[in-house]
Each structure stands twice: as C-alpha cells, then as structure tokens.
Length: 244
Length: 244
DNA sequence: CGAGGTGTTGAACTTGGTCAAAAGTCGTGG
DNA sequence: CCACGACTTTTGACCAAGTTCAACACCTCG
Image 1: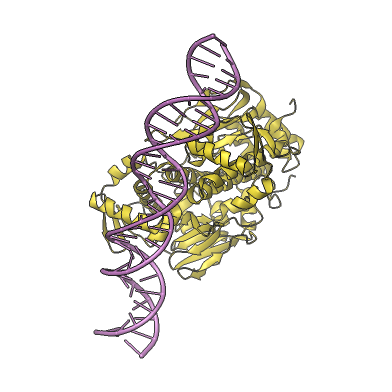
Image 2: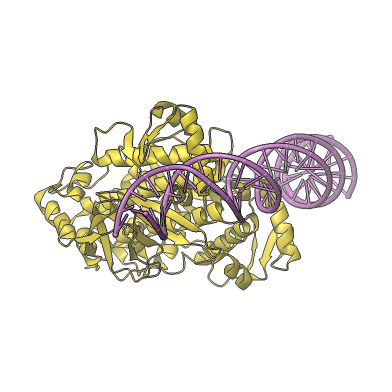
C-alpha cells in the first residue's frame, strides 16, 4: 500500500520515466482520510481540485428534480476523480465515499503542468477519459435496452473488471460494499428489483453470496448473457507521442 | 459553407493561430459525399481514420444481442467523429448517415501531430471529449430516471443546443430529419411512445409541428421540466496552456 | 402511380415500480 | 456480552408506464 496507486495504475498502461513519475507524485502529496458516507464535494462546487483514490470506494452521483438519485461512476483505488469536470467551471456531479478510505486531493493546476510538460501523459489522460466514455456508453446500452437481471449482471462484471486493473490475480470473488439501493441508483432500478434479480441469479447458479461477499461462479455465462466487453484491460498506446 | 466548419467550431472556444489553423486544415483535406442511410463504418472496424462532419447529420450506434439498436450520438456539422475510439484498436460503434452529407475523413496520425505540436489544441480536444462525456451523463440521467415525455423533451432541447453551436442565431425552429424510431433508439423508447409523447407535447402547446419541422414554442417550460443544462455553450478554457 | 418507409392509433400484455411489512445485520453503548 | 436502533434485504400485492402487435393513414420519391 506504500507504493503509489496512481503510478501503479498508469504504469499498467505505459512505462513511466523519472520526469513523469515526478509529475505524478505531485498529485499524491496531500492525503485526506474519509469516513464512509461522507460527501466530499457537492454538485455545482467550483472545480478547484481533483482527487486520486488511494484506498476505499467512492462514487459520483447527482439528484434529479423528481428526487431520485443517479450514480454515475464508482471510483476504485488508483482512479483519478474529476477529469470530466476539468472542461467546466463547476462540478457536474457530487462525490461521496461508499466506504472508509483515503483520497489525495490535488489542484487542477497540477494537470496544466502535465499538459505542458508531457505530451505522453496528456495522451494517456486523454485515453483514460475515453475509457470512461466507453464505460458510460456501456451503461447507456444496458440501462436503455436491457432487462433488470441483465443490468445487474453487467454491473457486477464491470465491478470485477475494474478491481482487476489493480489486483490482477483476483478471482471472481469480492466484497461488495455498495448497498442494493446504490446499485439500483447506478443502473436505473429500485432496490427491490435489484434484490429480486440477485436472488434469481443465485437460484440460477450464476453467483454465490455470503454476507457482503459475492462470488461470480458463472462469470463466462454472465459475460455471454450481456455481451460484456472489458474496457479496462487494454488501451491502445501505439499512437502516443514518444518520450524524448 | 466554404469556410471550414471545424475551424469555426473550434474558433468558437479559443482563438486559433496560424500554426493551429494549419494543423486543423489537414483534417479537412479530403472530402467524401455520403447519401442518407449509408453505413460509413461498422462496429469493430480497425480505427484508422476519424471524420469531420462538413454537412448533414450522422449518428453512431450499436446493436445489442437482443436485436435492439442504441443510438449513442448524433453528429452535426463541425463535429469530430471518432474521438472516443482513439483509445482503442477497434471502433466501439458503427457510424451511419441520417441525411445526405459530406464527411472529411482524416487519418488518426493527424491527431498525433496535434498532440506533439500543440498543447493548446490537445487541451481543447480533451475538453471536447469531456463535453461528450457530460452529454452522455445527461443521457443516462434521462434514460435511467425520467418518463417518456421528459426524455423526448430533453432530446429535442439537446438537438437545438447542438445546432446553435454553429448557427448561433437560430430560434426554436428546426428541421428534424431523424425518424421517431431513431429518436426512440437514442433515448430508450419505441417509436410508438415517441409518437405519443410528441402528440401530448403538441397538445400541451410546448411544440408546434409542420411536417418535418419542429418549433419549440415552450422552450423555457421544457427546460424547466427536465432541468436542462446546455453543455455546448461554454467550456472553461482558462486552464489551457498558453500559445507561445 | 405504386411501394416502402414513417407516423398514428388501439388493445392486450409485461416489466418493473410503489407501498408496506417482516426479517436480517451491524454498530454502538450500556 | 447483550440489547437496542438504524439500516439493509427480502417478500408480497397491487399498479402503471411503456412494449408489442397490428392495422391503417400518410408522405415522398422513384
């Protein structure tokens, strides 16, 4: 845990030179301990800082006029939170902690430096943004056109694929700290139907549950059922500018 | 129409120097006339080229295992198509023409040059990507948590706000070349319910229709009904690297 | 003029929402 | 270590929004 998650995550995609490592280290200078359920940033706050997730799960969300909540992203260790906001003056989503965890806030200006100094890191940040884009596209596809059970299946697959970015060798088993209501708010269902879907999946032998833990026993079948594509596994770095 | 849409669109956000103009001009060297309904690019094609829309409406879409179609983006004149694909080796969506139009294909490598030569344009491309991101977020919010009528309202508002990027002075009236089925495929409804929603909106005096044309008579009321935010109007360019 | 795409309308049906209550779980404090 | 309260999950009954299917009207463009 002493090693930087950010460098680990980025190093997963491209080799990082010393100069780049120094730029990235600047993003993890400060740390901030956060307890579960704390709201870190409200919707509409001025965009002054971004965050690197050092540990714990976080999520961005927004409320709708009718009072329902939409969860847009779950953020895992190593994620950079707030990239999409850079283009705007005010945040378009609130940020809260799903579990206890540690954040590293850093000023937006640290990114300016990345853009000026390292075309290579810029390209990678850009690409990471595009991965997020692909994730949203998947989400739309799921919410718009799939049934409740399929949505839940997809959500679970997305979670493990995300966790595997930093924990490469994990199996299908993991701890799910999000409540069913939160899952529902992410995929456009009520907690009631999430519960029913999970129950059904368990009956079908796709998953096994013990308390908080979920084991994706039938991962292959699940992937087939929703035409799942892992967006996090591999991005194309061949077009990146050379370091020189 | 002789003036480049791309430069016009980008110039809307930042002043463009000569060097940048030359980089951008490279993206509009070739042109390709396309008839309505032509499929330009299939899902899964290798990502070799991107496109600038010179005229006409285009859309990206994908099919789901169950046969339904999801339209992800509508592309208007001045848009760059394919930015989210840069991070991947294969396209994640197909591209087709909604109307007759003209595309300017350009090789992915033209972007590499942008990244190396112009931090300022890189930052803008990055920001444009983030605007797309915000648009997707809105879409999710709408599809996931709003009723049919609200979804249609939001879709129409999105269209005019998009058109206004290049046609600043247009009112609420425009030509809708997309069929109701396509609208439905974009916002997760069937053509039947799109029709009913439009009918209802007309009865309520929100819109007036004459054939293909739609006039958003009650635009303010519509915006209020769905908590609409214009994502295209203004992006934050203050953090952009200086030209020097 | 004819054909195929597009829009409209109706009726039956289905999925997931809503409401409500019961059963677990977990953390806290006594 | 237990008891309490708050939250989460499960389950049931009923309801409603939107789908499906089908028929028909309408364009519009060969």
